[in-house]
Amino acid sequence: MTSNSNPNWRVHLLREADFALDGGAMFGIIPRPIWEKTNPADEGHRIDMATRCLLVENGNRTILVDVGIGTRWSDRHRDIYKIGDQDPAFESALSAHDLTPEDIDDVVLTHLHFDHAGGLTYEDDNGDIQPSFPNATHWVQRRNFSWAFSPSPRDAGSYRKEDFAFLHRTGAPPLELVDGIDELFDGIEVIPCHGHTFGMQLVKIDASDATYIFLADLIPTASHLRDPYVMGYDLQPLVTVEEKRDILFRAQKHDWILLFEHDPNTQAGRVEFDEKDRPSLVELQNPPESLHGLET
Ligand SMILES: [Zn+2]
Image (tube, rainbow, N blue to C red; front, side, top):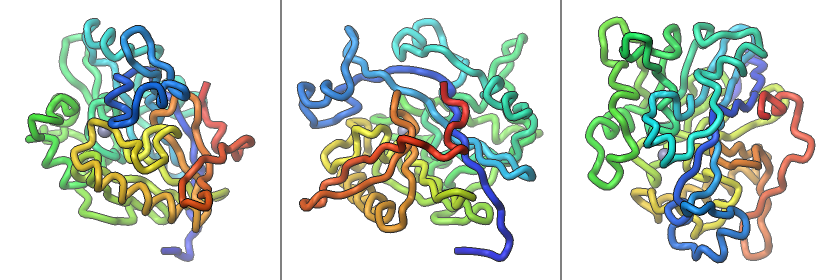
């Protein structure tokens, strides 16, 4: 959908933290000798990951898409997930844009798994949980918000209610529950997917320089493009396969730039298909200015 107004969105990638997850879980049925060629495992069988989020702004409105893993972690869990250098609430990344967490107008959450929503809050000096982005409207699919409060036993470990329960508190920042495909703002559309978890949403941005699609956990890294490369975490793996193909074909047809939330090295690229319709990535060698972002 186009409109007469031109929002002139600029897209920046922000890296909130490094962490690591079990390589076998990340690659599902793919044998380790294959996946470890591109994603080597450490002594704990974990592969390197990033929590990467988007800053979308046009001088009038400032939007974050996902907020990383956050700081409310015990030493034990920091060790399990190998949580590395962090930029809490993106403070240093935002300050490079002359912004503070208070300046964020909207937080769009792809879903409420802890590595996407953990940064919504922080613990203050009294041990109370406080919103990291107190002035932001928080957008999430209604179906995911509902599922996150009562997930299945299989995925309960991926949702921590303390990450998002504050949104029900009196005086909490506003919450907007989204139903299905929606254009949240002129040129910013959310596309629901249900294979990874129920009510995840991808975010597509018609920016001033290109159209970007933020893939969340549909295609967490550049190593997950092909059909069978589906995470063991996914609740409906065959649905993920269909959703991936659909998004990748549309991306190729419409020249969307893929943005990877969890790839430790590859930020962005375009997809192409071989004669057997197998996708591969053409990494952006010279990312547009807006994509240089604050990745370090
Ligand atoms: Zn997830």
